[in-house]
Length: 172
Image (cartoon, one colour):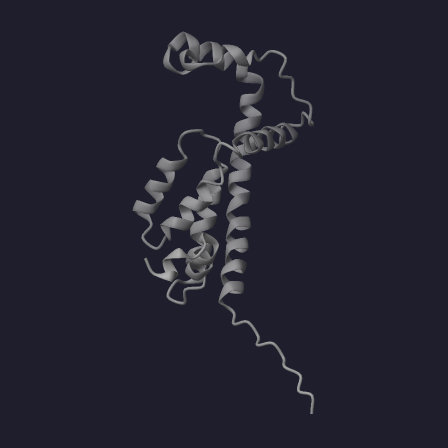
């Protein structure tokens, strides 16, 4: 293993983003697409959507697309779903008040997704928050494209610009 291989993951990431052979706008679009997929409210479709996009779009930088999509992970899933639901509720004119009193979270399990009766029961129970969640999620997914694009474009340009040499003061 060479010393270059032992560098920290952030150093390797910076080296990758600063690679002059990769166009900055391709890096930015790749990350933006992944970030948009991360905010997609259809749970369980994220990896499949990234794989389909990577197969269909040749100029995507796959690692950045996956990185963007996997910002939705077990640690961030609840905050993303919460933000989506609250935004959807606001867009529907309901304000920030969500009535979750009719949701019995303990009854949602495998049977809710594997049996017709269980799915119907879960759908009835989650109906008050399903529309706001889907609306907010799709809106945030659309907003994630320009936000992710400009953040990654700025980062790529910033890592590519040469750093000025420190001024040395001579004591003449």
